[in-house]
Length: 297
Image 1 (spheres, one colour):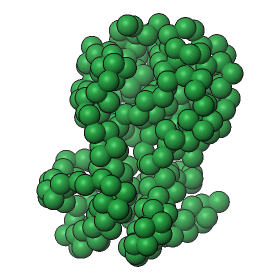
Image 2 (image 1 turned 90 degrees about the vertical axis):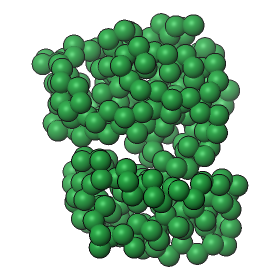
Image 3 (image 1 turned 45 degrees about the vertical axis):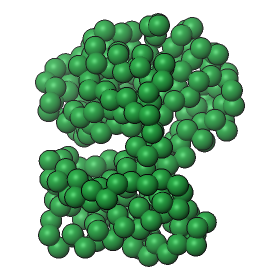
Image 4 (image 1 turned 120 degrees about the vertical axis):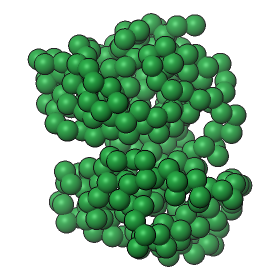
C-alpha cells in the first residue's frame, strides 16, 4: 500500500521538516500559517542543521479536498488539534489515515471523540527536534520517530525510511508515549522558565528538580498501569546533554504563544488527583508556566 497524498496538518517547525523530507519521494502538501506558507511559495523551505537544503514543497493554508488513500500527519500544537480536525472532518474518507505526532497525553483520544470512526487514527512519537527561525526557515536535529508495530505503522515506517528519516516500530506504544511525556514534562517547562536550551537544563543545580519531576511522573505512570524501567533516569540524564535546541515550549513562551502545558504537566496533575497521588513539583512547574502564559497575553 502506498499513500496517494500526504498532508502535514500544522506545518510549524517539526511538521515542515518531516514534510520536506517526505516530499523527496511522495506527493506532500504542507498546511500552515499564511506568513510561513507565503515564504515557502516564494523562496522555498530552507532547512539547516542536520539537513542543509532548500525544498520546493507544495504549501497551502488549508485543505480543500482529501484524495482517496491519504495520510495526514497531525503536527499542530496539542491545544490546536480540535479546531484543525473539526475544519476537515467532512473531507475525511474511510481510507484516510491520521498519524498524531504531538506532544502530550490523550491526543488521539481527543481525535477519536471528534471524528468517531470516520477514518483510521494512529499515534507516533517524534524525537527529532526543530527550531522555527523565521517564516520559511527552520533548523533541525534529526532523531527517530516511533510508530506502532501494525500494518499502517509498518507502511509509514517504510516511507519515512525511504525519505531518510529514522523510524522504529514498537509493540508497547502506550509505554513509549509515557516516556516521551516524562521527557517533555522536564525539558519543556524548565527550558521555558529560564529561556535556555535543552542541554542547559542538564546543569548540576537543576539535577534535584529533574529527579523530583521524573519521580512524580513515573509514580503516576505506574498508577496508570505503565511500568517504565529503572534505568530511565540515567538514560534521560545521558541523552539531554546532546540536545542543543530550544524546546517548543520555550519557543512558545519567547514568542508569546500558548504552550502545551495542559497536555504535559497538567495531565500529570490530573492523573495524580485521580489516583490520590501528590505531585507538588509538577504542580509548581505547571502554575509557573501558566503565569508566563498569562503575562504574555
